[in-house]
Image 1 (cartoon, rainbow, N blue to C red):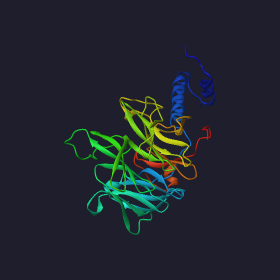
Image 2 (cartoon, helix red, strand yellow; image 1 turned 90 degrees about the horizontal axis):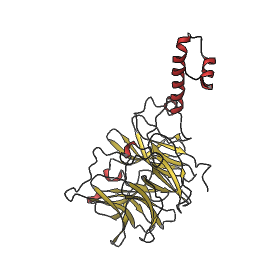
Image 3 (cartoon, helix red, strand yellow; image 1 turned 90 degrees about the vertical axis):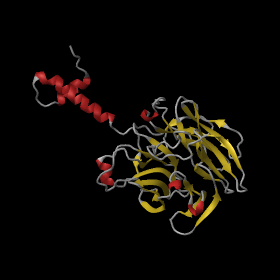
Image 4 (cartoon, rainbow, N blue to C red; image 1 turned 45 degrees about the vertical axis):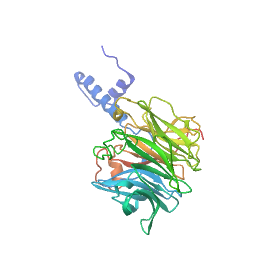
Length: 355
């Protein structure tokens, strides 16, 4: 005999007239409907910032003054680095278009300039450009090798990731079938973080990827693989004082710093890690104190959240392939959005986190 719960009783009282033999069937259908609605409810307070028709936006980078964000924008085969208003996500201008080396290797140099990798002028180099997309461009430093994810120090020395082929016959990184969400792993390659000085000398700082420069410019945080896990580490920009920040059976990647340097934001699957098939993991934004304490979960959603950056106002910008509702389409005046496409979202700093 089936038990009648309080939920069942409430459903019975709310039900329209029904034959006795259909009541249990109606109860089961109604309960499943309620369960499905609950399962699809938003898991956190994140808000959609950017939404363009047939376009994806990834890897947001807030400007130092907080007015703009840079994003990697893709529409079909067209790719560009775009500058958008951080207040509402509206496009301001395209900064760089269809430069393959720049697409995962750009950032803010200062208030009005961006830097990016490019093979213009006959060889690889790190260049700077006015963020409004106009004016002359200047090469900061010539470079060489399979480099990505550069950072610019105050003296214009450069820290970048150098990819090394495991198979000596493999000299180029294939872009085919590569998941744009995963910028910490390239099949057939290992990676090391290298400092390139203005005098032409270089120094390997550590094995790893996804370096992020601290606000004071004295250290970086980065991701390093250990077996199936990936942990976060800190190291000074001169290569001294290596410190492990995270330690769990998880993949902790894409770190960045809070504006005051007290917190490190990062992408992790630690809430629901599947270490054998990482594509099935739940990817969320987390934060941890720069001293390795006070681990805090920032986002909670079944979709893939990643590449978080904190703006000057303390809000956190990240990309995600969360589902787009009809209300969101109407709000952004877009007729449709491609399934599983990435867009920029924002969320406030959690009130439960210690400051």
